[in-house]
Image 1 (spheres, one colour):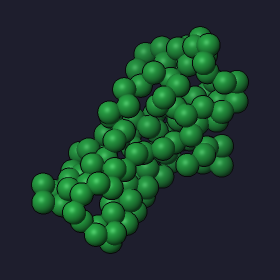
Image 2: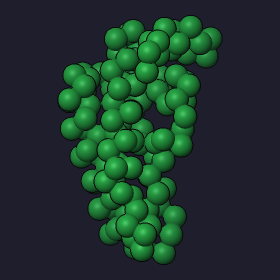
Image 3: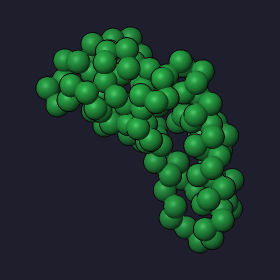
Image 4: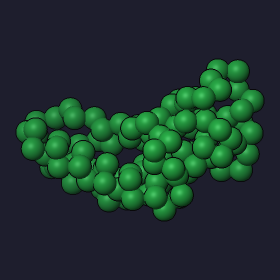
Length: 113
């Protein structure tokens, strides 16, 4: 992830104060999509960890250059599962996201989730 801070500031579409980190800063959006499929044990722990870790790194980079990151792990609720499964996965992902944001010293009050 070398040079992301410079890339964020050089892109003409990058607003001066507020950014949706994975769309504006050029990160591959597929990294942040969490699929729910209980029959296939999805999302895996690794998928959740990779998603929240990468979003947290981008949030940290954006804050260092004066941007307010919109941290938005995308959870796709499609499938035959009920709303309780979706709620459990969402809680798991958001808990992991906040834990990682704290690990990367992201100023939580300076983010939008």
